[in-house]
Image: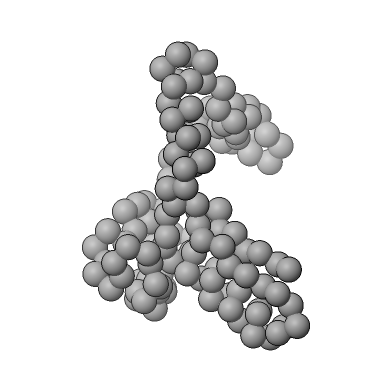
Amino acid sequence: RIVVFPYFLFSGVLVSRIHRAVDRVAADHPQLDIRKAPYLSDHPLVLDTFRARAQEALEGDNAMNCALCKYRTQVLGFENEYGAPQTSHHHHHEGLGEACTLCHGDCTGACEEDVKAKARHHVHHH
């Protein structure tokens, strides 16, 4: 059995792409038991973790795992980014889907063709 579990807090285009890819692989390999799990969403354990992290921050006992991120310690290959402010590299992704009226709640990917068309007009290079 193969279980594909999107490790995301919210639905969106990426989750719908993952599910469609799983569907294609399952169709190509019917002998395998391939299942799709939902994204994390507001699972009680996720909410408990958020509460625990907030309480740690209030008590001054927060030891987040970002202590070793490339912005806070020198990491081979990322020397230029040490000490730099942590910012998004794709400002046009901020708020993605807020104006979408094609899906209500979970993203169905209905707008994905529109997203691909807009991506062709990228003004910067990766």
